[in-house]
Picture: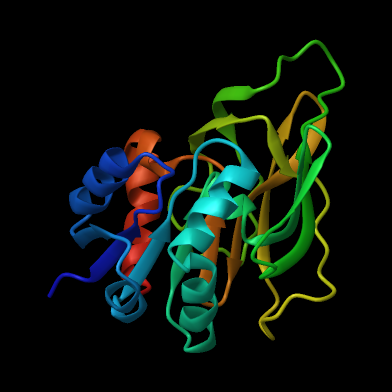
Length: 213
């Protein structure tokens, strides 16, 4: 039986591409902002494109922050993608504006700081530094994934994470600047890159997530 996955529609994110990518790997996908349906699905995918503050406003508008909290308290899987990952952290700072996130993880989302002449946003294909404990990257440890972003989490703060399970943190480097590319933390998983735009490697990563539901 196909796993039921809700792709949360809160006004931000590549809804159609995410829906197609999940369907490609066999998920039964519903795009909705309905709280109860999202709460009871096998998996919840939280997308996100644009500014941290705007995404948080949209998320709170559909009680998405409460939804994520309740799902995780019940051990129900959540996957955040791009800004949908960033808003899981405590704080986002963009253009001097500080916005509170969902605070599932401590840490600050801030502008990337490449040390050379590399442009920001970081846009294109890049490799990731995969930890040996990963389940998300099983079989695709050496693949490249597609990134489009100007902000990221440049320092991982373990102290204060809510889960008792030690998170598996995957990193990427761009222009000498390292930032978090993915986190696996019990039922809470997130990627800075876009698996739905990452071809076969992205499909395999989503299949790994679906297989864990």
